[in-house]
Image (cartoon, rainbow over the protein chains, first blue to last red):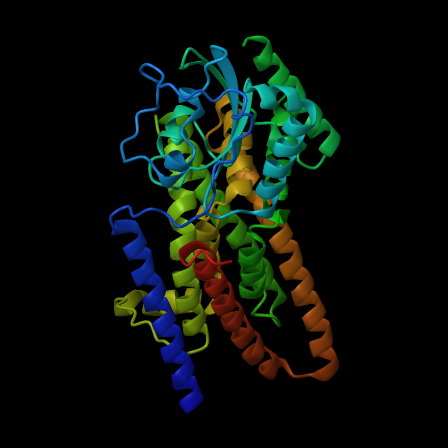
Length: 194
Length: 227
């Protein structure tokens, strides 16, 4: 019966360890998450300007800015050559499911395929964001996120004037062509207003 | 229009249960439901109760959302964030009970003891609970289908109970089907070999092992975040 006991204690050890880690992760001071979802930004080269922008509008962060933000100074503060731009956010969590990865990949590819020029000149930006990282929680409320989502946001003069959650990505994820078309159409509508 | 709503609810439910992310919990559910393998009626009843358990969760959520002012994004985020984490730990413990590695001291008054024992032993009450808990474990796909797909329809149809009920049945159908198939198949093999007592001994062990493995998978994925 020794193996039984051994298995029992190993499992109990694992359970207690998991529980301890769970509690630790919840209650530890929000140390910088190791999760690596470095915000990819494109099209900064052409529009980046060195001088500081007066009062850049940044979303109210309850917590100190995350590593991401430090690494990639928010383009809101950088866009100078024009007043308005479109940001395509892809919101995800720490746990990445396979369908969610497909949605992210398709969104990214569709935007790259049809809007290379806009990405290049900074009128459009694709930004994946992990909502479970400290400082990003407000997005859940801001955009009424119930799951992984692609959201278009129209920014003009540093202010968000319009946004849309492209909820149909979940319906169209099994049809790549329709998905691409959907993203293309929606982004075009937003770009018209920039 | 009514019919369209109902059909959508069932379809969303089926889509939820066949999507890859609840696969692990569905496997656990099938093995749990079909573990009384020689009693086809019990398996069927367990499957029904599991499905009703799922519906129950969706009805409670549906009523909360449709009738009160619960903030849907916050609710969805909360469920996705925490339930899966707790679920791993719970599944391992239940698996250990199934393998007789742990004993739960049940402080049940003696009068109802027999009834409770019967229910637990039949595994039917357990199936209901399993349905309730598994339905709470939302992942991105199921959250998109439930909060993003079903709830808007339910609000439009002002149906906090009916549509979530139908949706829950949809999410339980594939599990019910598979459990019945397993029971039918195993029953057939069993009839060939006449080893009724033996086979249930093993199915209970197998269920326990599956629960532990699925529990470890959940813990590694959602707590340790390494899968």
